[in-house]
Length: 92
Image 1: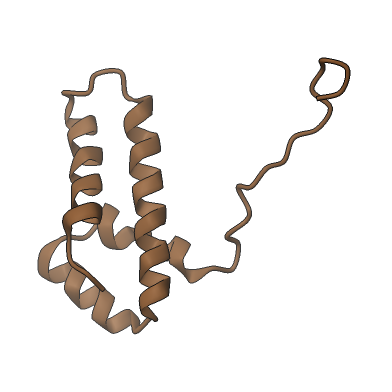
Image 2: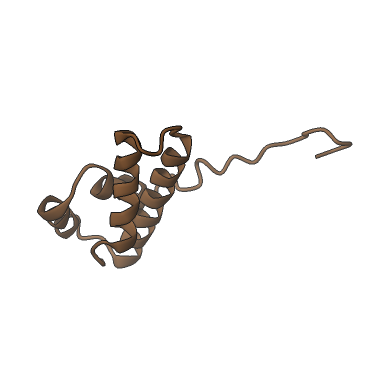
């Protein structure tokens, strides 16, 4: 802010460019159960990379859930499932 007006914006959207954790979010958004276990084992990434991937998945699902007006809809249910699996799911 400068003189009560917006003077600049910092966009952190590209902060993770090059981090493979961003691409691993699909483990929670598209896979479950045995398919997730196989994906994780075949990717052979370090535990800290998987931790960052879980954090990205949690952020994305939380953001998406906040955008859904009907929290009882199937869309909301999907985001809630992802959040639950990220928080309570398998440890890497």
